[in-house]
Image (cartoon, rainbow, N blue to C red; front, side, top):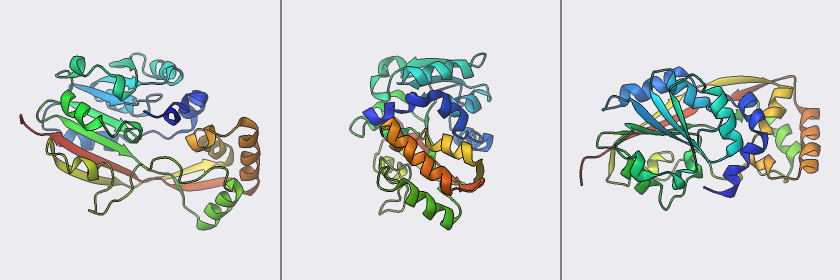
Length: 258
């Protein structure tokens, strides 16, 4: 888990208000895919519980882990009364021995790219039972109108790199988008599937400013400079803004005993 991954808590309330959630159809795909009935799931990097709530609505007990205490506070508020148990810590800090055998699903919603590539697959393999499911999903928000996109990029200039930080779903040379491209090379996992879920979203100008204010590429900028950037953005954006917000879901199963 990188330091940048902990920037989101600086505006945890904004994250909860402005970040889009996840459709029930996505969770249904995970449940339909699973070889083992999912009674308990571990969520990695749960944030404020955007995906947690949808998963728990299917009467699945969720162990929702989150490293940032500010995000964790809102996560607890938002999941009160649901079958959710929160756990403080990054994936690298979670008690593997305690979790092993407890869950049939490990999933991450726009968070797996923040985990340590040197250890994440070993830890995942240790936690999941044979036949257990791993699910990773997320997607970038792209401005649908090329002209609006060009205005936005000009407004933010070089101060906030639109491509900074890890990408969620870059396609690699073998054709799988990440992280399927990594897990496909690991014999401890199989049955890999990739699903695209088309989605379009509309934001008002204020909500758009609120949304980009929750992105790490802006959160790492000094507040005064960030304010100036947002003023430039506000001046060139239309009242209503359309986004292409397609989701990519990757699924895999833990193979049997080695």
